[in-house]
Length: 606
Image 1 (cartoon, rainbow, N blue to C red):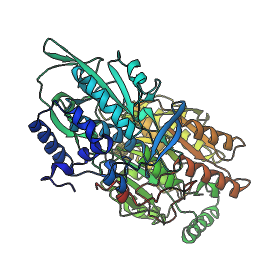
Image 2: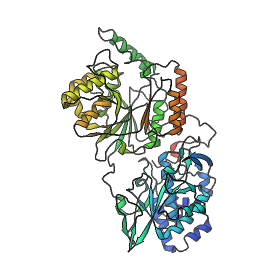
Image 3: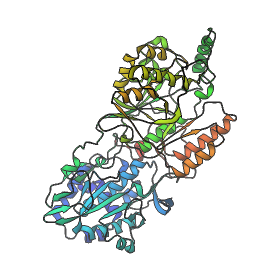
Image 4: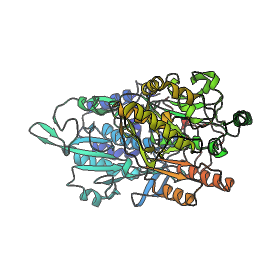
């Protein structure tokens, strides 16, 4: 922790001094009075009193660099269609890369004494910092010096051409631009993750007109302020979200930009997984015994897809799905893992924000256990203790594939979004000959038609399901008989209702609590001949919000399929999440600096 009595110890000050030589610092701040500089240092030290390693390891430094202001590990990567220089950061994540860029920019401006304030309400998720236009020459000099020490790039926007921040020609090309984009590129030690210009920051130069500073482009909050408008300090995470456990310090802004906006998601959002360890001998014996008892009853035979081994096969998908949350969804509050008294050996069950929930904690009728039916388990999710009203339900074969926002799943007023598939529910009533997924869809259609008078036809995409606890509670009351039958089906049956993955969405839609959403999603059938090609394409492009990897039939060559999945997941998600213990973490593809646990990597602000 930084001492409040020693402004010189501030991490913002340290960041600035590690990037800008002493002589240059003196030139930049020559016109800033000493009392003002000391005041800035004190405010920075106060803002930095609690700070995670988003300013150390996750911000691209290491212990040696902290002491010497140099020795960053730099390599050449490909981003934005060209080769750029990047700093290697163990434990790099999308949110940390963006927070790193905002932090560096704010640190430079603060310590140089350059007036600025962070801006919200632009149409882009890119963090934005406003600077009065009279300071432009000082900002350009400052960034040229900083980019010489820590390779950075500037351009018109995140999508435009990126030029080295040290290039005079690059700055001349931007001289008539009122918005400049700056990026310090980051990659993880494997080189599989590269966070380029889209994770940078915008600088807006506000012109002075008639005693007002005027914004160069629209935003949803305020575009004109008095020249002498006061500044306030708020958390940097207001402008570049990071997980709630971590802290990136504070930054200057205007009161208007610190206020809660109508489209801010102010409610907590949790994640729920259902998971099973199919290799557990006790679990397998229990399943086999239950299956034998059921199939011995006249008329009790199971459809071949109701309990085949592929339905329960685990290839360490959960580990990588958790990595995808840590990597791309920093706004998730708590994660609940619903299991049959099991937990992966690699799972750090004592990490804050993660809880393993046994089926016995949530099933209203213990006689329904043990169960091997995901529909039955899903029917009880709303009984999880301390679960938020708004939560995402994921199977462990569903992954976030790039940075996602709460607004892709929930409206700011609490309404949920759902994602219908092009796949259709077959016509007719459910029968024992139906595939379990089709029978469940038909049953859901019958309940909706009975209650609302409409006929549904579409299945749902295999994405995270945005759910509301209160809607699930209501469904349990309104459809009590169907709910009870589903809870007591130990295996998928023709009588199941897909409560969490279908009925919730249509029921909420018809009661004005859900809308149809849109999401970039892809489903990969691992049993298909095209599976390898589709995984390769997904890895090369990384252009989907979510994806699902699944198979409903046993693979012809299970070992080859497992290798294919493992290679893909380890490459797509190479960075361990804080939910993992050190044991069993896959090694990087090439030698890399020692990777320590998250608390030492810079996520220590817990």
